[in-house]
Length: 139
Image (tube, rainbow, N blue to C red; front, side, top):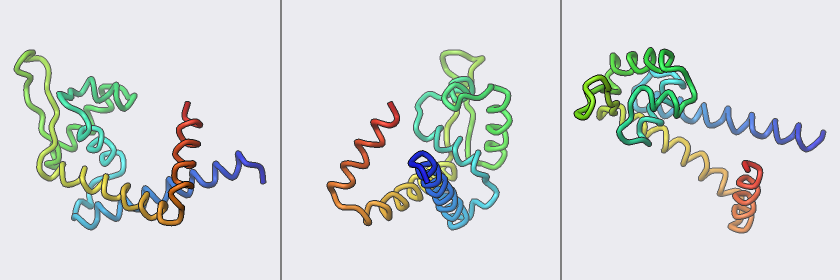
């Protein structure tokens, strides 16, 4: 097997494991109705300030209508609120509710726990190498 094929397999394994870890966290906090796409939206909202549907669409590289549909569902489910901008009445800002913040925290905790588990199998030097190689591969 060549290196590229093996890297692809490893990424697939890691991706599936992270998805499973995130979904288990959702079930654990009782947020069973959220799907992975909604989970990712909540995480994106959690990491931004003064977010609007338009800026969220740009962040996620999606169309505004696609984002609006999912945002409306998240509002309906009680995870997100939309408030009219003070500076521009045509614009709405997006914020997480307490329940949305709980979901965002679960998302980050699932990722952190998975990475911690992987890190336990490596020495400090190997972790340094892994970070260097991954950063190099991304550029």
